[in-house]
Length: 255
Image (cartoon, rainbow, N blue to C red):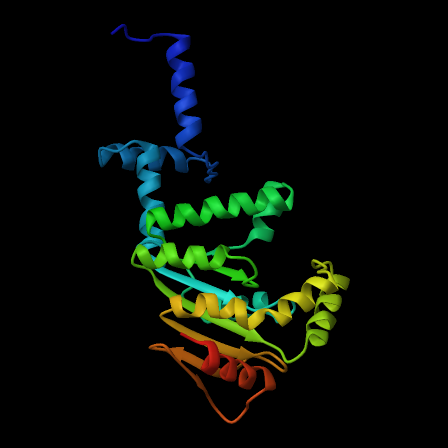
């Protein structure tokens, strides 16, 4: 077989690289590059290979690689999922790679529909690499259920945090306040629909979870129920209406 040389070979190589690799621009202090290059050469590695391994080692130290946990932060719009995620990160609760579709849309400057596709591909990459990751979701549709099924098949530990409020009006009030600060506005019809379907949506996913924790957010996050070994148990002395409703729904329809 004739060996490709010159421009055709370069084009083929560039095409292969574009299909299989991403570029990351790394900036280091002046003079640092030569030091890193020398160390890489001494270890018998290319500069790119040395930096790539250093990144992997750092990710392993932070528990972002080979920690096969899929964390779901769920609740309808306005319940405070993003605030909860931030609180969990601040106390170093393991969330893995936080997959945030809004940030993916903003960073890549794409339309939401394209952002959803990019998010789906990113989740699949995490699953393929065995990387722990987390997502916020309203549980509408079947995407979270499908991801949990894949994760379980690949040996992931599936954990769910569910954030609740008693009324859709409270959710809408919080959405309105958030929109005034530049946050996303959600249609009233969508909020009412998701609120009315919330237990049906939850029960599609809950049996796939190894554990789940339920928090009320009427006045700060208060744990009100827990799900382990297939059993849902209401906890503590504070029992908002929604968690009692959930417990009754689970008793009647839960698997």
